Amino acid sequence: MSAVFINVCYIAAAALFVFGLKQLGSPATAVRGNLLSATGMLIAIVVTLFSKGILEFQWILVAAAVGALIGAVAAQKVAMTAMPEMVALFNGSGGVASLLVGWAALYNTGNTTFTYITILLSVLIGGVTFSGSIIAWGKLSEVMTSRALVFGAQRAVNALILIALIACGVLFCLDPALDSPYLYAVVALSLLFGVMVVIPIGGADMPVVISLLNSYSGLAACAAGFAIQNNILIVAGSLVGAAGIILTNIMCKAMNRSLANVLFSGFGAVKTASKVEGEVKPINAEDAFLILEAASSVAFVPGYGMAVAQAQHVVRELGELLEGNGAEVSYAIHPVAGRMPGHMNVLLAEANVPYDQLIEMDDINPRIENIDVAVVIGANDVVNPAAREDANSPIYGMPIINVDQARTVFVLKRSMASGFAGVDNPLFFGENTRMLFGDAKASISAVVGEFKG
Amino acid sequence: MEAVFLAFVLMLSIFLGFELISKVPATLHTPLMSGANAISGITLVGALTSAGAGIEAMATLLGAVAVAFASINVVGGYLVTNRMLSMFKKKEGPPQSTGQPGASA
Image 1 (cartoon, rainbow over the protein chains, first blue to last red):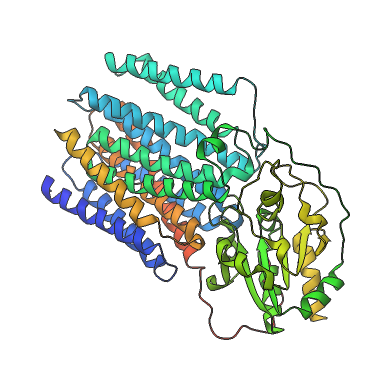
Image 2: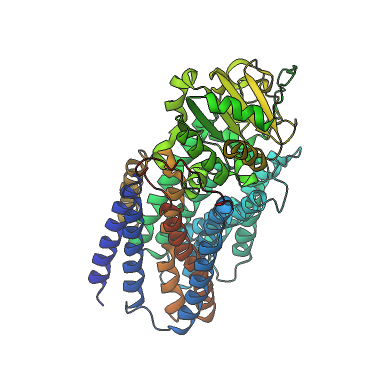
């Protein structure tokens, strides 16, 4: 196949990526958008396989079959609650692939200094994406502690790693030998750097990290595209890079924090919230049922706790019972609820909640006063009024869902421990707040039982 | 000159990416992310050329490992996105008031 034909096909693939991403923007067209994008990928791969440059197929076929099998099985088996971990792992495999592609490009002939710089960039970004994603996976799947790991000289250590990275990179470019020790140093330091940048980030900030790593995986592919001078890698990689940056930005705004603040300060390290004291008013399932039965509008506000308790199905069941009872039911979702962007939406979609019932924070807040009962399920920081009122709170300024302004609030909570950020939540002591203690799934099931009984 | 040309492509693609993504509703953030992630598996194309060029054993090895990882990214990414998206449904007709039991995970 001629080079022109290959490039024309790459243009077609790029156009399909663009249309695919565009159609991913609306629930009605999203499935088709994903298909378009996959078609673009298929075209790019097939054309590359049949290009003249490819002489040996045996390794490719074995490697691709193994990878495709792993990917397919993982995609089918993964539980929806484990989706953040899965996305982290896919990110990581894309990152390490770009690292290796950059490395392999060293063996091409006719590399210029510019090429060597882009090779180093793809190794660096790919390496950070890979090890960062592995740590993110560890935190999300609770293989390791999901708390922020902070130690005294952290910034100094990170600065040293970065300086060493740049130094090794420069030394490599001065003498770009295939077995240069500086190359291995760059690979090792990149992997180390990825670990170092993710460990100080706590579980509640994971939506930011996941989107940022997503962006990096695109930028890594983009750098690899420069290294091997391939347009389609640059186009597709930078599309993904831009998408990830936008999501990162949305997540940061939803927490009223700058990206630098999320990345460099362990959450809650600086300020301590004013102590809130008061008495909680616990209720049982029967009381909850009586109040819900009389309600004409109910909003569920889910958080990460709903995912942990796997309560999405019973929540939907209760929602349907309430609708059958004549109440208007909605699901109010904070942008950073859960551990990745849109986490709650996916879980509720899995439980067959129609997406038109999923309401964004900015749409529910203006009419929250007309909600009879707001049911908070495993959410804490995103409904904490301290973010609005207490200037000393670490989350002060973060936009929240103002459930405390609803007529009645139910808070489902395992026990009286503080939330992820270690923040005391004045919501629990509110005049109109009722606490329903216990496992979220068991509590909701009990209320459902009351409805049926 | 080649580098300048590629940088030009890069600049335009980044702007296009920003334009495309900025209006996605929050409901679709996860599928968008995993769909975009699958696209970043485009590095597979680079991996194929490295693995198949037959220049040197080391390059072939690096390329082949890259092919495996990138394939995980591409195949897994698209399939999981499709699986998520097929769950998003619009409301059809009146809700069932009977509320069947079961259906819990």
